[in-house]
Length: 393
Image 1 (tube, rainbow, N blue to C red):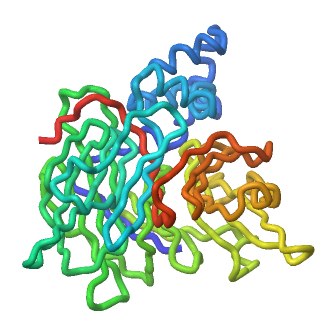
Image 2: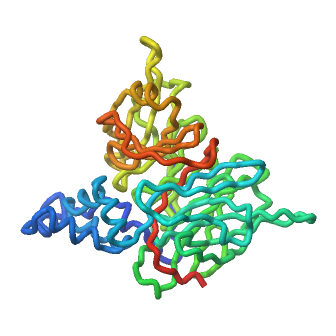
Image 3: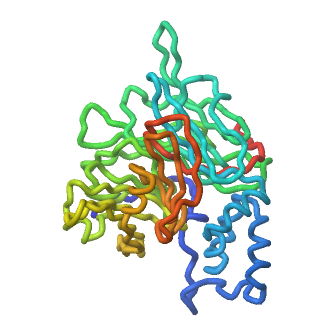
């Protein structure tokens, strides 16, 4: 394991929602008796009325509250009572132009990027709080014009142009994080990290944008053999994560300390070394998850999904949480691509036949399905936002 720490000059914490609950010296949890005298339905009624970004604080009050807010039945009720948007941005290419589409299993308003100055824009990163996104717009002009970077809140159609980073270096990966805040009068505070590939390919060039300075600055390079696919970062445990090419391990970057580390995969997965296995990262209940889809040798080549969860982040220890056959899913729905864990048992998938769906692996049945306008989806971004205008300027 490689770990290169660097403490930034100013504190910038994002750990409130993605970190596990704090531990008490007397017991293993803090506040487990909080609200114990209240019936379950009353606790649910209160929490479903809490503003979206305030849920981060509620989840560290007690393990009981945390469990309630991550229950699959919680999200639809919370979205309806707080006018919260929850779903996924699907992104692909159509006739050499970027196409972004929002889908949700809840009743949500239509959301798009058509308010940006560029009609050919793509999402580079999405923050877990404030409903913010970092986008890049491209312009079709006779004279070649460099791409323009934006920070925006798609739910309220607000945007602001950002200074451009060193675009002559090809982007390898980007991630974004914002401080949770339910007060619209407070200016949005966020950070963006961009890794790019210089001419010498044995390291990554690193730049960080801080909204308080409103400028990019050079951060220490990542000096290891890091080859990152240009895929959405997975936020968990206060850090951003990417599965490196060929799925040999996980690259993690902490936007607060600007430290990076490499996390080994579960020993059983690493030792198997199955070239046909499809590996991807996801997050569930604030914890990093590894999804491994393999094909069995027996029979007709049945597909099996293994879900591994990070049990101890400091030690990099994984635990297998679920093993399920995908035979019935393939028989009923055909070829589907698993993109994200919506909950512990439900996954979000899309296909080449213009549809996306939420599927319950334990029960072997479809939860919800929506039609999409694009056949080839390249990237999927989990997106949650309130409808309150945010101070970007």
